[in-house]
Amino acid sequence: MVELSSYTKKFQKELNAGTSSLVLLSVLSRSDDPMYGYQIAKMLEESGPDIPMMKQGALYPVLRSLEENGLLESTVEPSVSGPPRRYYKITKDGHSALDEWAELWKQTKKFVDSILKG
Image 1: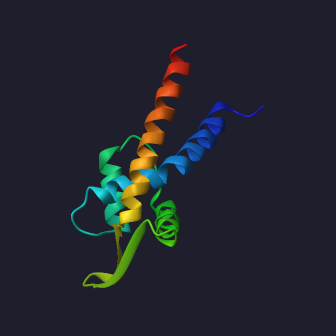
Image 2: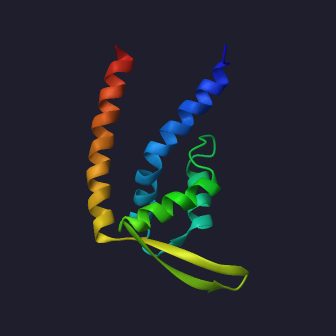
C-alpha cells in the first residue's frame, strides 16, 4: 500500500502542472517591467512560502513553453553579477489567454468547491 504522502505529492505535482502557466502569466501581466526566472521564482516563494507551488527548475520549461506558444516574449541581457539573464514579458496573446484561463479557473474552482462542500 502506498503511503498518503506519496499520493499527496503526486496530486500536488499534477495540480501544479495545471496551474503554473496561469500563475506565470498572471505574475508577468502585473509587472511593468520584464522579469527573469530567478526574480519570478523569488516572488512566488515570497507570495506563498508555505505552499510548494513550483520549484525553480520547473519554472523554466513552463516559461519556454509559454514563449514558444506566443504568450510570452523574451530578451537576453548581460548581467553584472553572472551569466546573461533572459527577461520575459507577456504578449497581447498572453493577456488574452490569461483572461480566458482565469475565467476557466474561476469556473473550475467554483465547481470543485461546491463538490467538496457537498
